[in-house]
Amino acid sequence: MTLIVHISDLHISDGDFDEEIFLDAVEEINNLNPDMIILTGDITNNGYHKQYERATKYLEMFEPPLFAIPGNHDVRNLGYQSFEELVGERSWKLTMDDNFTVIGLDSASPDENKGHVGTPQHMWLEHQLDECVINDNFSIVALHHHVIPIPQTGRERNVLSDAGDILKTLTTHEVDLVLCGHKHVPNIWKINNTLIVNAGSLCSHKLRGKIGNSFNIYNITDNEIEIYLNNIDDEKLLFGKYERNKL
Ligand SMILES: [Fe+2]
Ligand SMILES: [Fe+2]
Image 1 (cartoon, rainbow, N blue to C red):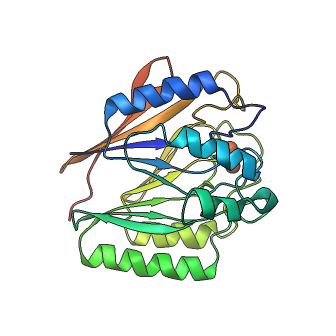
Image 2 (cartoon, helix red, strand yellow):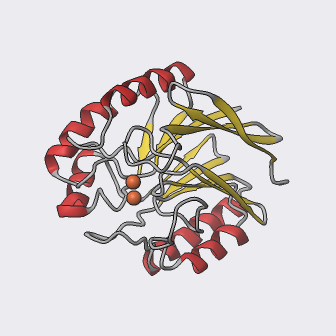
């Protein structure tokens, strides 16, 4: 069994960041002892270097290994440079136990809100996913921007500008899980054999209606994937349960 925690949209700043909720979330997540934490962007609110320095201290509180990609807020104000200096590579691939691959993509463009993967990164993704198919690996792709529109988020403005091509690559390679953030609304779509899951905001006040702060948990066994929506200091519910793609 593999346990993955998916967090997103911390928006660390003096404004809408809720430290108390963040600290509660850290405690909950550390107690779960997941195999890894995947953070799908908007770590900071403005990409300021000082916000990154602060964020680094907060992220160190997580005990499990954490892998992050940038969001649109992170690459403002030269924030992409600070991300590389203080968080890590903006796109990456990791493989566990020779049969489990996670790919992180940078869908953010400096000082723009809209998402874009772009041709070089798309070609690299294709190549990595070809290898996953050849090796029968369980595959996860993480990126900040949503690949398809999310309900309850009003007018669509920031979906990936190359969403159609990326979606085709993800579904034809039967990627098992696509993890996104950005809209601050948890959601699951299933397209063909690919689950596309959005996480809500972990600890920001930038929320819609009564949708609170939350993170997602993925419980992956040989046969199925269970997805739990974990509302901070509130109810935890089974968000979806799906059979694993047959190898
Ligand atoms: Fe955000
Ligand atoms: Fe965002």
